[in-house]
Amino acid sequence: MARVDIRRLSTLQADFEAEFQRLQHWSAETDAAIETRVAEIIVDVRTRGDVALLELTARFDGVQAASMADLQIGADELRAAFEAITPAQRGALVAAADRVRDYHQRQLDATASNWQYRDSHGTLLGQKVSPLDRVGIYVPGGKAAYPSSVLMNAIPAQVASVGEIVMVVPTPRGEKNLLVLAAAFVAGVHRVFTIGGAQAVAALAYGTATVPRVDKITGPGNAYVASAKRRVFGQVGIDMIAGPSEILVLADGSTPADWVAMDLFSQAEHDELAQSILLCPDAAYLDAVHEAINRLLPDMPRKDVILASLQGRGALIHTRSMQEACAISNRVAPEHLEISAEDPGRWEPLLKHAGAIFLGAYTSESLGDYCAGPNHVLPTSGTARFSSPLGVYDFVKRSSLIEVSAAGAQVLGPVAAELAYGEGLQAHARAAEMRLQTLPDDPRPAPVFSVRPVDAGNVNAVLQLQVAPGQRRLVAPADRSLAQVAYEPAGRAVAMFEGEEAVGMMLLYDARLDKDKPKPQLYVWRLLVDARHQRRGLGRQAMLWVIEEARRLGVAEVGLSHVDLPGHAGAFYEKLGFSYTGDRDEGELKMLFTLDH
Image (spheres, rainbow, N blue to C red):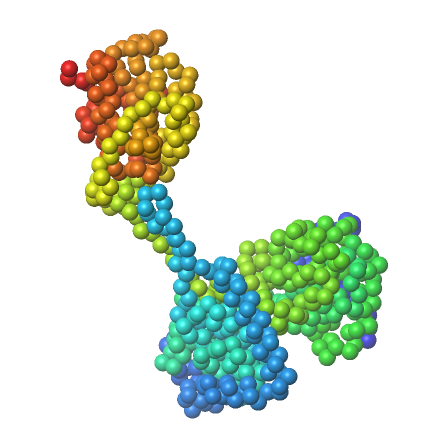
């Protein structure tokens, strides 16, 4: 057999970038004739349902069925297939299924759990995870029979507790693959239809009298299947539009060259458009792998496919270093990425984009295809930059949970209303505003608090005060407030205590002591009510105390100002008798209460 003319590149060559771009080029565009035919098939199935399915199955698969009942495989036949295969095959299927199920159960526990919490106002927020009601899995049939694809698509759905798993698999000329049917039995598939192609995808997406409509379709297929999945997306969910299979091997030269050559074959044998790339800083090792390719290829049953793949889209690339090899790998974002090195853990942190990463010389990609546990349905054609392997998360959906408390409505309402008015959505704003000032009485007894100067004996308790989340743009925290008042001779800090618990704090400013413009006014510089004691009337009682303090001091008025932001307390102060002066102090709106002595 002639020497394999696989592309040899070096990152040192002047035209490397151009050659690398040519290597990466692959168009996902489907032939216009295929697109037209797929569109016609989908319309036909939507319009004529089962009748169209029977005709299309006869035309494309050579199966003459009198009714749809002849295109269904029942549970008894699936069990019979499992019992008919060899003991070794049964053992392999069960062992692989157990590992895939265990991995995806752990994945479910880690990524698809319900959770919730309550904020300081008692508002509940969270996430509810629910399985899909029904999914369809497409499994290639005939010569391209893949029982492993059944396990990888159906088991995650089963682990996710999907209500019904419907499998479609074509049987050209009526040929049923026992391993595929046995895998469906092991994986817990509920219903099986012997239909394929674009017509099977259309039936799953829209439903017929016999084939139930599903919520999502997963699984590989030919160009017609890929085109059909693309067209029905939106009507149903899909996993991905898969391109040709691909493997990228990062090697430091420590792994036997024969092993790496065979790993490159493992993807090249899928089809002529599959891609196998080796990156290595050791030029002599690349030569050894090339020699192994030439020596091993003649004995491969699919040598013609492998040869076409390696010569058409394969490459052996000499890099300056393993670090550079990792950077190139990130640009490729391969479906399968092998780190064939003595210390794979050294390089794994540098790798950001890959469908699956296989660490170490003993971790052949083929183990991941069949029985390691993680899913072998992986993103291709660079889509690993933004997508992930098939998993249990593909068979569940997440709903947000929101239960706003009465107190929370008072905090969130003004914020929502302000933003809604800004967007011109008055109904949104009014819906939020209608829920303001409608709080039920707090079940706790009316607070009885004392006002004490903040001093060394109680400052630690005062520092524990928390600003309510909805007020953080409006009120400074306790530590900052105390720092500010410490440098103002006319200012003083007082705290409200309920028993020995600090429940609030005020900064007061005696304007009679102002060195520039003294006047008979007690100014409320800051009012902070602890987040855990909101809506208990503490703010109102604190302001009434201030008014009485002003009377005791013999001043004529109480002044304050507030920021002009959503959620401000202007309306609250107006109810206490404060009025806007029309003036601003450093951008804040000024208000005044005149005492009647």
